[in-house]
Image 1 (cartoon, helix red, strand yellow):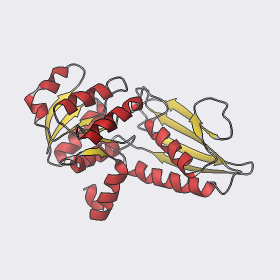
Image 2: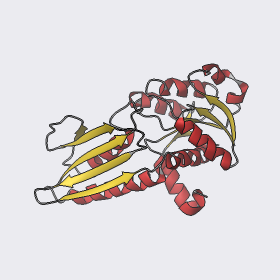
Image 3: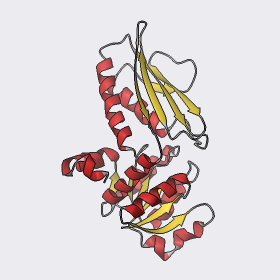
Image 4: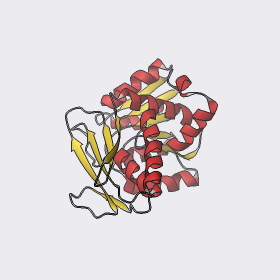
Length: 250
């Protein structure tokens, strides 16, 4: 498979290493200094582009890829105000797009655990949730897209929780999210449910970028040849039906 990389920082390089180890060809490596490569025949010939950039550039990167008919797999966050426009293009058949706030297979298991715990807690109103997320100092958006997805998962399963906020003082129906930026931390998410007598905590802690990079390459493999707006839930469901997770990570 021919893969174009949009964003060639630490994540782009990790994706490149895994993609090549899985037998794929990297057609172009686009970063801020070689934007003209969007117009190259190598980019147009790509089966899929994997995009990890910044909130300010992500949406324009998608548009440039879609203009050449190249499907996009993206893990960029902080740009979601433009998501309805991307979905509309996919619905019209003008684009193929796969986005998730976190490509880690472990995090997606954590998403499911979070929703299950929240559905249980709806019956125990004495507990109230809060969240802490920790990322490296280079991450520009806050809270993380993963934290927002986790908060939305809680809100979907517990009707007592209506919103999330980074404010220090939040009402009872709001999840407080504390966003910390420290060193080169790949990503930690901690959810606590606290009552007057105890605290229940679940945590996911990434050890490196390799888990995110592997998930992005697997998503690119799954996306190639498909059409429309694609999601991690759809991919995970398909892969679990077709093979074991041990086969996926080989």
